[in-house]
Amino acid sequence: MESNSTDCTHFTLPSGQKMPSVGFGCWKIPNAKTAECVYEAIKCGYRCIDEAAAYGNEKEAGEGIKRAIDEGIVTRADLFITSKLWMTYHRPENVPLAC
View 1: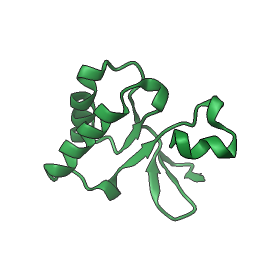
View 2 (view 1 turned 90 degrees about the vertical axis):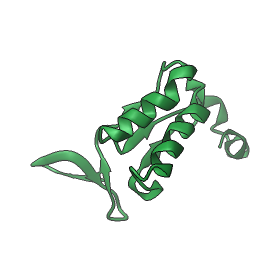
View 3 (view 1 turned 90 degrees about the horizontal axis):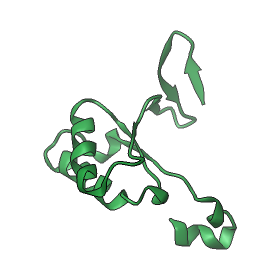
């Protein structure tokens, strides 16, 4: 990845896509509030949503993303959804289960 030294708002990926350098993190958002928080973050302009299975709120984050897409605020192609592979799933045979 390269970043323009005068513009730190994004990273240019090898594909040429520009990924936002700041994302909305879902860590410690209560499940009951996650969908609404993610939806509002997208409405405010966030295009990168940071998630992980360990957060326990991936389903709810997906609901917020779906709502924003359904309402025409964004398309799926506009968003970067990042996640992490928990350290107990690093063996190749465990990766599909974690995904």
